[in-house]
Length: 290
Image (cartoon, rainbow, N blue to C red):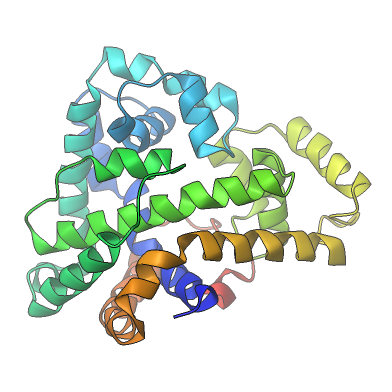
């Protein structure tokens, strides 16, 4: 399997990992250990496998979040609950969310057992932790026992492994975290601009200033859309991201990956069509990228 095909497979499955950030079941479990507010719950639960890190580490790792949003969550979260307590709460919430949104008939099915085995096999083929800090934190966590949680954990490992490489590709292309967010939004297949600002903590003024800089570099036009040069930079970033993440997918082989997609894409569509994702989250061409 070449890197482009591997990238398409990874993107096709990512929603089955990321929807849990919005699931009320996860927010409820995080609230039960004392975390308050959307920002604290997201930041602390995602970074918890790395330990009680401070805001600078989380900002560097997440890359496209405003530092002030991270600072509103850390280190305050660790004064409320330990990273291990936060991560355990997240997993409990994921368990409840997957059971609710996919149905117990799916989460306990032979198809889920098979999908978990396939996804875990791919994740276990990741070649190592070099330069993959967030992935490494998740790789240190024990594998769960329930098939649907094995499935989620495997997708999470693959997503964070890919994400760490994506940050390296963006940095190499000369895009700051905010530049990356704006250019992805401008592509029409990322977040909508309003959702991106709100969820990542950027002000209108900061967004406008970064857009002006990107226009000066010839990467976006006055309408806020990517120029030809902007598309080229984004394509280079995505191609390098695919190249840096291909090894576990290539090790699995096309037949195993096609079977995993056959099993899991209908579950993804169930989540996309009726799950907890907020309205207005994605740009106008997001569906084209599935």
